[in-house]
Length: 421
Length: 173
Image 1 (cartoon, rainbow over the protein chains, first blue to last red):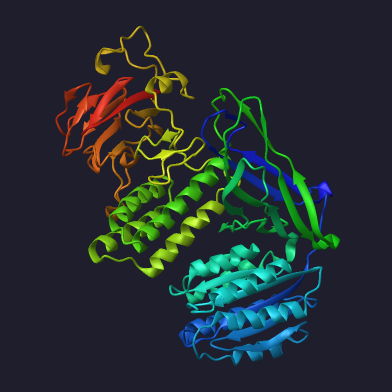
Image 2 (cartoon, one colour; image 1 turned 90 degrees about the vertical axis):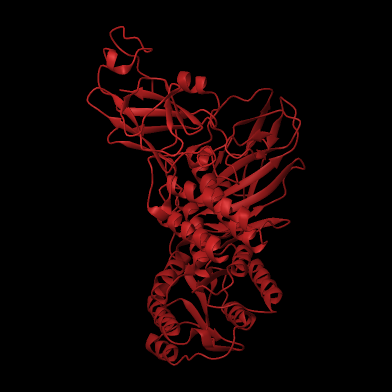
């Protein structure tokens, strides 16, 4: 146990809780950073790009994806390992995992990629992960980025199994969805298994920007494969978890440990945790140990444990205290995102009336917080729902990823809603 | 258990925001508490002025108020706004690009009959005036119905009823 490997700072919604006869909620905002005194060098990459080449990608989409892939190739350093896989209903390894001494050859191969066939993500994932594993080295950032514009059918479970196993081997998965028709819930599920990200690319023009965003930071990770041990004392239950920084992403509540992602050099890895605490007696201290495990490639260390003890006092009458502003802002933004998700759940469940009421509330909350573009988008969808009985698929994605990004904007901000006292 | 003052949903202790309507659950519910514990001190009228007399009959504030503190009685929500230009009170309507400075939607403004543009708070040389914008359900100042488009001076602690929604207004210089 080497404590100084990670700097862990915890903010709690309450310093003390009241002894009550019913369970109560407590929020922790956990910030994980490299120790201040440590510098670290860039990591070499072992990156696999898995690109959808199905018929729906034909035209501008594929052309923009190809030029974005070529630009990523251009950014590789000479010690990076790179592989490129394309898939439709079968996969093809364009460039097996290895160094890229002559980038022009690879760029020319990318140029020749054409579109055909359906979308079977499992085909691409299997081939891509095989390439990452072939070149996997302990001190490399092992990462697979999948880009797709469509749904996969019938092979979802097999994909989940692949990513789960890869995550155990320290391979991170990130998904990029292009256009309105890809399955965001499925990619979210895959990303949350490994602690990776999902991004929504609205138009082909944005492909390079988004790909660069994911690519950026891969080689500057101080700690990778950061996991939170989810065994807490029996009267404490972790009920929800969400990564706030560097990118906002829901986290999967697994039985033993939760994968949080990487600690990059510049930005803290921050996660918001919601706990339910059972009945407690006054005078007790509730222990809430935050136990992390991480790989520190810069020091050639794997599975290093870092422990931070947090305790909450139980008192007969808790003093009135305001939660820390950064925690409050993160919970508020997270709540807006969750309200947005519930709108679509209401619609899918056929409860249009509940969805309309929720949309009205959410529109007001977004407008009050100054997020006018999102408020307008939601209003448009509410009008569409009441007049046509349906919402637009691209509007849904724009709102989902728009409200999600509000969460990551809260880190470091003094307050979220300046009009409220 | 704690209850959302806006939509009535119940949450276990420790919840911070209502998942149904999105408002902050820990907002103070007692207006008295707001008066006594407001972070910004509420100014007292000067020169022995009587706060029960209309503003225009008073000696006035030392300087024109530059901030208005509004307490929504039913929900306990408190909002502080700068008194630079006029303050529109009503309900947000993104479809019409209407964003009032004080949006009463979270306080059941619609259910209480608050119009989109219901009333205005207008800063003047001497103080602040309240104007009903021709609202559907009218505006009352200390239980007196106001004629639309007619300015009425406000004093510290006045009660204003917008349709069926009661607010209390305080000023800070």
